[in-house]
Image (tube, rainbow, N blue to C red; front, side, top):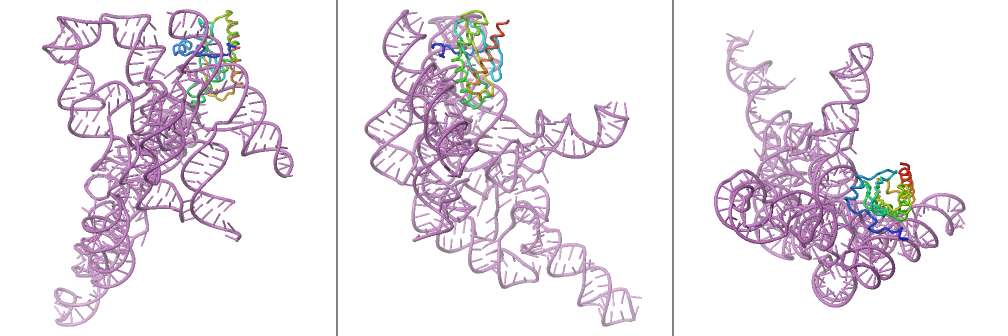
Length: 130
RNA sequence: CCAGGCGGGAUAGGCGGUCGCGGUUCCGCGGAAACGCGGGACUGAGGAAAGUCCGGGCUCCAUUGGGCAAGCCGCUGGCUAACGGCCAGGGGGAGCAAUCCCGGGAAAGUGCCACAGAAAAUAAACCGCCCUGAGUCUCGCUGAAUAAGCGGGAUUGAAGGGUAAGGGUGAAACGGUGGGGUAAGAGCCCACCAGUGAUGGAAGCAAUUCCGUCAGCUAGGCAAACCCCGGCAGGAGCAAGGCCAAAUAGGGAGACGCUUGAGGCUGGCCCGGCCGAUAUGUCUCCGGGUAGGCCGCUUGAGGGUUAUGGCAACAUAACUCCCAGAGAAAUGACCGCUGUUCCCGCUCAAACAGGAAACAGAACCCGGCUUAUUUCCCGCCUGGCGCU
RNA sequence: CGGGGCAUAGCGCAGAUUGGUAGCGCACUGGCAUGGGGUGUCAGAGGCCGCGGGUUCAAGUCCCGCUGCCCCGA
């Protein structure tokens, strides 16, 4: 059950971390999201959320972040599994930044889950091939 | 019953379950501590939290004055910490009415008023009207005469003068109606009415209202144009500001005295004022500061109830309550049952099935304004129709 | 969260000082010149000035409220 929690230590909170992941991490897109990720030294998996300021008004931006966090909380062990398999290395960490763009505020939780699941699984598969 | 006006209030669907999040605090374990892990209790968005349009608190900066410029407000009185807000009163406008909207000064000065129109603001005089009337034509008389003179008439008549009644314009035309008067006219004079100024009295704290007297006889609009009058205000904002303080770079920093005076500051500008590179002497000290962390950070012009004063806004007193404090930023996801309203389908109707239910997220804190918005409820008032 | 700016023809800009029938360049349409095109030349069309109120006789311009876009401050 501890897998389904989401504490402060599971979040990316420093602006230099965001800058580092954006600079040296890898990225890919789905229909409504841009995902940056990078292998990290720790053994955990961390999440940062960013919503475009073109998503208006403020309460819709907040809702986007909540849904992304909720998705991450429910599926973190799966995501970790995919990337550990891709890198062929158990116990490595992952920093993940999800950027939401306009249009994302209209998604339901089910639609969001489907889109992010598909995107992440596909990306992990491509990493493994290389 | 229908239509309308004003004011106030409720709600932001509810209950349960599973998995989670922020804050405070307690217990257990680990640890030198910071803290970490596990568990419990309490608690966790709004009426607009919004726009950032005003006003304050709070914080730092500036503060030795003087002058200038710029800004905002504007009927009167009150309330308030303050306001561009609120309450009461007064005036003007809209409406049958309830009610709503607006507000210093145009007689201190400057400026503007396109087009049209004679003229757009100390009135002027284009047409017109009226008077005088050179000249021209004509008639009569004197005369020999068609010369000259005298007199009369006509004129679509040079020129001079009077006048502002009328002139179709314009958003707006320099009092209105009637009478007298005159060559024609005119507040030129008179009566009534409207308006202005001065002044006397009455009511009111005042804005203002009412009743008189006198005067000149009349004064266009725009200050959300400059401006005048009265009032307000130093500047910036919690990313304010304070404390701790890695890595890296660097060897300085501060105080005082004396001389030189490049340059800089004085937060709109000027006068004025102040600091001061460099060189030199003495003394003291390890500091400044980025990442990051901590504080500021929620007990406050606070909420509720009652009483008293006041038409009211509001004030005072007593009792009582503690009600988010994050920092890449907490309230969410899924499931079950269910309330209200609306839509669609079937139906005489109902039941039933399905769908929908707003605007929107605290970021230092308050008082307002403005804007967005769901479903209703209550009270008072106005007009109309019907019945008694 | 706080502070500030902009919006006018399809595009880029004037006009806002001092309110009075809104213009310039490119692009567009048509005529002429050429065998045809480019180019040149002549003519024309295209705007309720971001939206809604107010002041005024009259608003792109002055005042108030919204909407959208952009910039600055750790």
